[in-house]
Image (cartoon, rainbow, N blue to C red):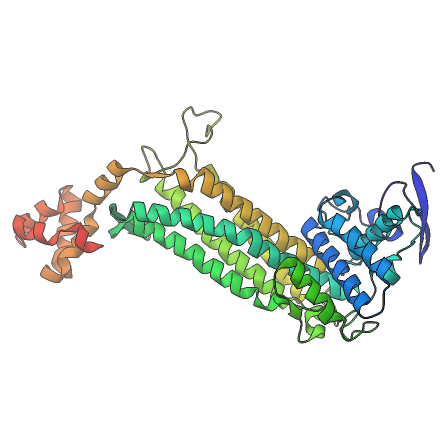
Length: 460
């Protein structure tokens, strides 16, 4: 018993590790939900803690909590937000679908931090009671979805968006540097008319910017929090002014303007807006997947592929083939994007599977979105630093592919017509000769006329 203490909750007593800051309900969750290794994301813990701090201020302002208790909750919350107690949040994602055990985990830790600060016994619920004081005017059913929304908004605006901008800036720089490098374009994986390498890369940059814009726009509805709805949306045991007061503090702490939701019932029964954000994250992942594949194709070779892009050699590419270089950053990014697409599908199912007044998939939804944001941010940073900034054009191959392309014949169509142009291209292909030679041989144009029309600068 030296390593444990006895704690009591509404179901009776239970052994809790002696030095743990969590309490009985957290311990029951540890025992009852020993499933997998995936913990509640710490960002979600911090957002719930932010709500506890804001709730204490609101409850004090409304005369429901005395100053001493308010100050203790604020101090304990600030310690958690400073990362001083991360190890005290051991609960798995695979728990109750409301997230109640995680909400109580935070309530209990705040209560026990207050006990330590006042030289009271751990687990005594003195001077702060986890439910009556820390959870006052709240329910897991309104705080947990609000915390998901807060953490998703802050992670996207403060971490993901800056990473996206750094990547698009790097692509824009390459696009500007390579705006005069004319190369062959490709459609259906076959030769097409010319394009500049700068134009090709500008498409990648714009695709990512469009995905970023859509993602940021999808956040608009997440600024409206269901705080004050408590158990089912009616706001039972919560004063009318609580929502406005608590959200005011949250906005000040995050430097982001949040508002009270227009209909608590909707925001607690379903999480359509979170599912919409997840779908936009998937679209961003789709864009990055496409771009990584393009770079993989353009850098293929070096002898038997396209090899118009030279990518950085970061590590040996094979355990058996000496000198091999693989597009490993493209592969890592593609795997991350694939995982995110799977996460999005799970969120879609979870969002549609709630029942009556509550969606019971909140931990999964929060975990999948926040994990996706962390994965895609890290992958974007790696992709930029380890590949994009170091890739270079292979001028020799680019020029060779351009000069030998039969699709340059498209420039002659306005002068001689589609049928004659096709005849020239077929002759050049069948006899392995240049387009000019085939054109003169068929007598459709002389060399001077051909050269005048065959100006790649005018084709782009």
